[in-house]
Image 1 (cartoon, rainbow, N blue to C red):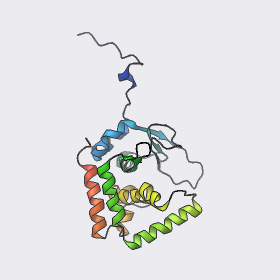
Image 2: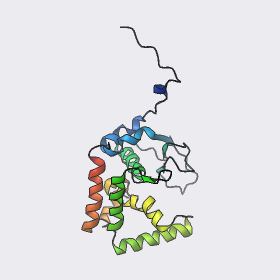
Image 3: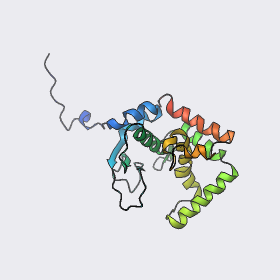
Length: 205
């Protein structure tokens, strides 16, 4: 049988986005993320000072600071491998799964977004007080410009979720959130466990 001629570079098939091979394990561990992985660009980042403790930076396609406009960018600052890399990449991709596209005003995954709201509403009064304190510190010392509610939905609630779904990456120390009792309340435990099951079983249609 004669071999097929190579696909020209200007052919639509040649232009189709290719999924980074490092995301193969992410697709296995978090099937709900599979439909979005071909949109991901992974690139190496460079720390600018010795106090920079970032391991991974996430940029949605619409972020003005995104170095790859129109793509989901995951910028790696630490040389992670194996399960640590898979958990880090998958954990940060949950930012995208729970986001609202500012152009369409629609959630990326409506069901996940609704479940994320349940985590928000499951916080105790003590947790809300801690979150407000962290937010005020970010405003004062970190230049945070978002409202408290936007900060919660775009950053803080994702930290609650990652602390449970990817406990190795959810804080400065392994399983820090669980060990510190953030999921002791039954309502919160039910909310984050529901998300863990959702992202690790079945793929979005």
